Length: 193
Image 1 (cartoon, rainbow, N blue to C red):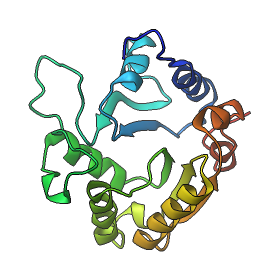
Image 2 (cartoon, rainbow, N blue to C red):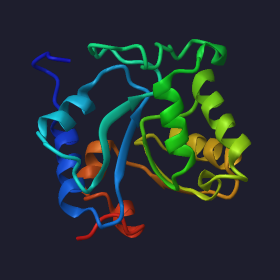
Image 3 (cartoon, helix red, strand yellow):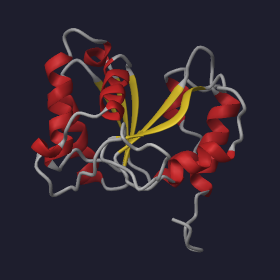
């Protein structure tokens, strides 16, 4: 993560867009299945002394564990590999809070995730079980992926789990989507231009 070939400029560009263009009362929350803490590091580099209005919080939730070393990692999610069975997804404070936050929200941007591995399928099936009772059942999903086949499969998986949801497919790399100024976030009213 500290190597000279690691480029976080697209993350910084996203954070700048969100900080400058977010429309109140929208607030952004970050969740990832990645182990790296590049996103968390870029959020912290912003140097906010108090919670910014555009962000629900400055913590990045790691659903599948993280290599970040904190003074106390006891509340963090345990490591999960793509090859692990869904039974290995155990309860943790971090995962429980993240699941609750997802369940009570209605707009999601999914980048680079296909919900293909067993642990991620389990996550979708968990949302399916609560969809009739919580806002996630009537949610909007913006799925960004450069591969048309993966994009279509991911959209179908989300739609199958949450049949009342609306899914927007964006065939683009994350960098290209950011460069285009996240038009889907503009269209749903989260960002102004």
